[in-house]
Image (cartoon, rainbow, N blue to C red; front, top):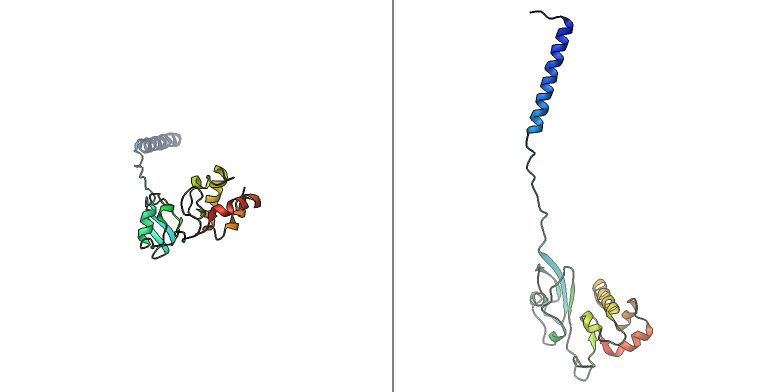
Length: 180
């Protein structure tokens, strides 16, 4: 059977259309590939710096969820002159934290506990700092934030670097705070 040129063109066009339609249907019916969720590896280690009244000051790796007591154990424990009552050993530590174990006050110095006790600026909690005259929750939080971002206080006068603490407030606080 011989077809004329226009008939061949129509038949070829029809065949091409059928092949295209079949391939579209084939692709459309193919199921989507399964979605694989790949979780990023989570680091379960914390790095903390422990110093002050400990056997081996240094930087230690702890597991996620570790407590201050775990950091003390990693540093070989507390020295005999450590004032462990001045810190919360049950508190969870954060990655990059600097933990300073305070030393007990020497006999004849400012009392370590009681209503007129001097607070250690490098270990006092925000709640404890609020007990100081002229220090409210905002300034207490700023003191703790300054301590965390600057690795602690080196001298009482460093309080002037904390927003909200001026010369008059510093003089009111000077007898009530210490650096250990």
